[in-house]
Amino acid sequence: MTDDEYVIEADGLRRVYSGGFEAVRGISLGVRRGEVFALLGTNGAGKTSSVELLEGLAPASGGTVRVLGRDPWRDRAAVRPRIGVMLQEGGFPSDLTAAETTRMWAGCTTGARPVAEALDLVGLSGRAGVRVKQLSGGERRRLDLALALLGRPEVLFLDEPTTGLDAEGRRDTWDLVRALRDNGTTVLLTTHYLEEAESLADRLAIMHRGRIVTAGTPAEVTARRPARIRFTLPESVPAARLPLGLRAGAQGQRVEIRTHDLQQDLGELIDWARASDVVLGGLDARSASLEEAFLDIAQREQHGPEDALVGGGHRDSGDNGDHGDFEDRVVGVR
Image: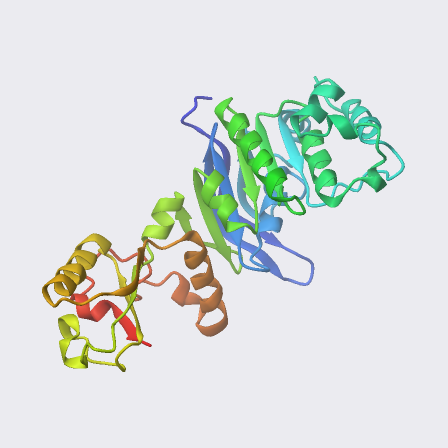
């Protein structure tokens, strides 16, 4: 298997629970060797059900899944020694110390790292003799990660890896994930922290109602959303002097413009302001964020039909065609 080939593959993957509820509805994805891939989703989107299929913890109801070229459910004896899994909750005996827990787990792991090395990787060396029940929530998450790394996995599954960690612990975990990736480990993670996905992921996918509705690099996903320009017009500027057809709202109110050509439209706005001797108060121009893309999907879940998530008519859905004149991209004056 070369570095360019997928080490995690799913094609038309489905998971149906008893009673007929379809949690995963035909998703397809591929993760390359040495890549960090983030699987995000709205509440109940099916990402945990999907990851369990990829980890080989449950059989697929339909479609195919391959990890390191094998079916992780049917060929678990061959796949499990080569992967690491960090679940949302480890469920380890509370009376064992961190070192005893790691030693116990190492006894079930082929080619396990030394206990001290595993604990040092996640910053728990100084807590090795502390019982699990006395560890903080964040320290327990670090212990979960240490156990997932015991077997030097080629593929690492991380389910909400930084939940409960403080800011320093979260950054340390990010640094560790990057170091693992740089050494060739493939990482698939789920997270509710969009900043985490934006910072770590080489590529990502966002799920909604059991389907993947958008995927790509973080830059590609955010580029499908319009950038925004915000400013306040001085009260001395009459409405008739607003630029490029803006003729709405009262003087002195906040203006927001959304655009798919930030550089061009910001330049036009600044040229107008300079020529008109107008100061644009609180001028703020920025590209869309991953959070905005995610929230757009979540809001459509509440207010629009399911098909609108993938459909092509919406101008903010990733359409690369003509987006109209500058004035058409004005959201409003408020």
